[in-house]
Image (cartoon, rainbow, N blue to C red; front, side, top):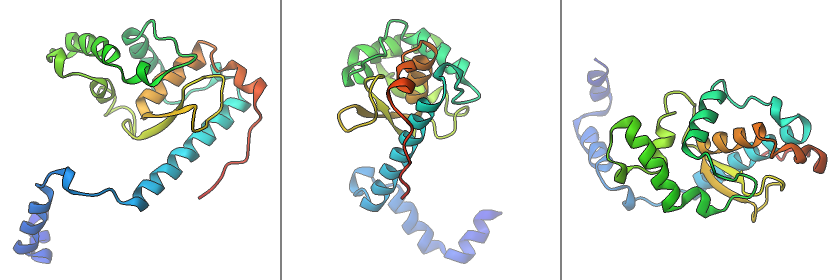
Length: 187
């Protein structure tokens, strides 16, 4: 029903052209700098707001989502020994970390572990957490503030998992005594 209305408004030729474009490889398209800039602004605003909350409230009392317990439990089951105080890019994106996660998820999902990486961890929350895969800034050192040297881009669900663990395990406690909330920058 909706398709017939669209085809009357647009026409078969336009629909075929659109289908042709959508079937092309994503590699053929350049990133739009204005979209990238808007995304970067949104990610930085999110980071500023979160850090100000850490500066103002006892992190152990924070609830980041209605699903905090499930996220924390799944994360710690997957990565029981991951030290969260000072992370490195290798901790978050290493082959070994991906293999541990892949093996665990393969048992749960009965999918060959060789094809599983971080993405399936995120995918298990796709119908639960809004914008679960949205790029989000994470502080590498839990005792530091957001800066170019102390930030890495992760998916929103990775951010939630790590920050929930840091909050519950006391790693963000020092932020409130070390830093004061700042005025956020608006775009």
